[in-house]
Image (cartoon, rainbow, N blue to C red; front, side, top):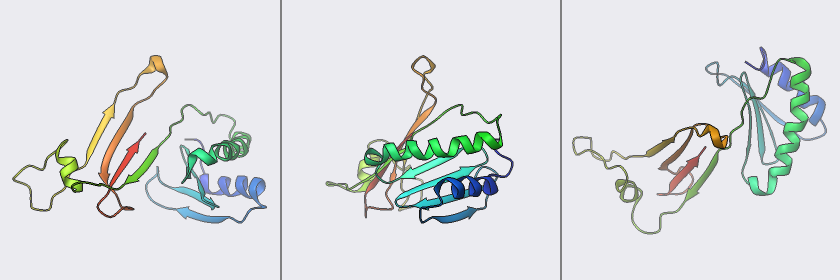
Length: 161
């Protein structure tokens, strides 16, 4: 665990370092891995959980420098409070929603994973590929997920992490 009390510490870190900006705070309950606090500013969200820091932004290609700057601001505060905290890994999640131009969502997915005939009608599939770690390249385990889009009517969502 990075922190014993992520909410209070995160509040202090962001308040001290980002107080000039207009911030929206959300305290999150749930299981131990989901508890924490999220700060939203502009189109970026920063969450601190007990075991990780998460940054979400809609357009990473134009915001990469800002994401780095936010991490640069947060880490010294975390380290000052808990010097034994160490950043061990990092990961990146790419998520895209796309329109299916020809055919339906299920027609596209049936090429990869069809619904067994014994399943109820209107059952849909999704596909997950789990890729093994490649330590010699510095890669941890990763995944590729193809599923129904919540953003694009009848579309597909692609997640790669």
